[in-house]
Image 1: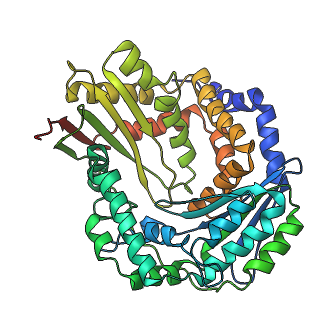
Image 2 (image 1 turned 90 degrees about the horizontal axis):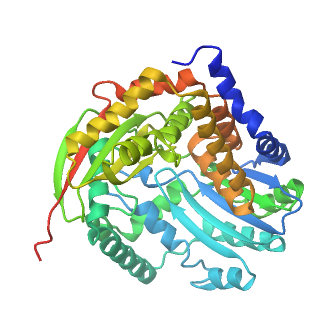
Amino acid sequence: MPSAATAPAAAAGPAAAGQGILRALDDARRRMRTGTLPNGLVWIALHEPDDTAAAVHCWLRVGSGHEVGGLTGRAHMLEHLMFRGTRRFPDGAFDEALEGAGVEVNAETWLDHTAYTSCGPAETVPLVLELEADRLQHLAIDRTVFRTERDVVANERRSEVEASPESLVQEHFMFLIHGEGPYAHPTIGSAHDIDRTRRSDIQAFYRDHYHAGNLAVVVSGPLHPDEVERLVHRSLAALPARSAAPAPTPPPLRMGLHHEMDAEVLHDRLMLAWAVPPASAEDHAAWTITATLLGELPSSRLARALEVEGDLTVEFWLDMPAHVHPAAMTFGATPRDDVTFDELAQAVHACVSRLADEGPSPDELQRAQRWILRQAAATLMTPWNRAAEIGEAWCVEGTPDAWFRRVHRAMSVTADDVQRVARQMAAAGAVTRLDVHAVEDPW
């Protein structure tokens, strides 16, 4: 176990090795200005004078985690319909106007957020904000368009989920972990719920969640914050101010379970999950660093134990989430033909237990923290990446500077912090396990 004297040195290591990245991060934070309009809308401007392009991202604190069983898929379906026109800009005019100006547009829906993203020449920011303001207030959900888009989503569900045994396994695993909680159901929705969705359901979801109090507009690029504030106020000050509809309260994660299932996948698959605190929790940074040195680094502990020393897996992955509510760190691995599920699960547990007993070495902790810094450096390189990280962190943690604070919290994690998290992971009943048996397609 590292001594009390070595732990602070390990925590300080990334600052010494990554001074330039940390300075760049702090400089960017100082160039960022934020404000709130009278209607509750948050605007965030990150001024990068040397940029030639600007990103404009509209982040809404609503996703599939705001849905309940029987009404799933509405957040995702509304995202589709947001591109299908308003009275002022009918179907197709939105894309035509922005593409003609050289602006790339996209969108995504996930558990805690829906984001409408764009990036283009800096002089197009007023146009982007004008068009975003229009569809955030005046979306026209035509009956024919609605039915067409519902069919598109249903076909997306069939082609990307129903026809994919791997996706069905993942759905089952999420239900195993989250039970009836809002994170249990897939963002695209269930086939049954998609088919029975009515236009009035989408209109109600739009009315309840697409309002100023749920929205942050992030502009990253060469525009001065004073100009961003003026443009956002001009375009979006009239957006209705309403109280946010409460999100469903999730039940505790279901840990300590062991299930098996047959699936038409190509290979057997072992899946494990550990409960992780919400992104806003102070301890979340320690979980992030622990996951990094366990499974995300190329030279991670699990890589050495399962692939180099043990030769137990064909492949494995480890995913560490950042969400509003407690979620799950998930592990998946394909065992080699002569390796049983129990042998592989025991090897993972032994690896975690070893970290719990010994803690990380100073060098190991530094490598994990430098990995976080490398990711932060990559984010700082483009307007789109900066806007994406700032917006996503605002959605799950609630403050405009949450991403910057997240990186700094990771730099302050000590060896003792990692050891404490590993002990929680190694405790009896802390992991939920799913053994997926590959079966031959009967057809």
